[in-house]
Length: 298
Image (cartoon, rainbow, N blue to C red; front, side, top):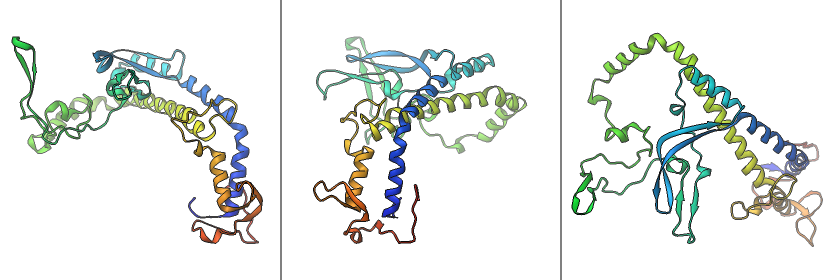
């Protein structure tokens, strides 16, 4: 896509612009698929934080879209003895809200732990610092002594075991082979059952959840960025989130002005199918040859 004759760009964009007629039907299809797949929602215990709230990683319940494919999978998984809380936290970063009047003093209202994001954490260079939480004259609680492991790069989740063990333990620090062998002997007789009844179903639940997120992204972001406010079924473009210059028709118009012979008055409307006289100064495009017949997509 980085080097092409002018005719390739012209033919490709003509085909793409004709495809706009199917975008409305495509949105309806995406919506139907999202509803068919459904969604798993996890509920966590919250604690107050300023005017907002912070979610802990302690689950208190879950919900699945009734009658959806995920609902059927989750029911079957639980019936086989599976624990839905151990499959995934089903985090949703798009559910985090910010409240407050001043932009530099907003409080976060979380619906998922960590605002729905699991990522390595940054710390001060001299972490861990001694830390004491004082309760006034009644006493204090020592949270850190300064002898703990350096927490930089730890994943901010209870499922990141080094953070709970006080550091990244070297496998040579204990006889790990013996532990692995013991655990293998404990479960090897049930490995086919574990895979058939639990693992395969867990993978299907996660895969369907990921697919639903991909379809939502295509509906709410990809198509919006391409045609927001320009086609039926798409709301007006949020200019604070998307750059109007990246609308498909605007990108094509800019490229036509650069590659093609254009109307001198507007500078954007091609007057014929020929290349611009300045095409030789470009490093990524060149004129078509007489024997070159360039159809859609080359």
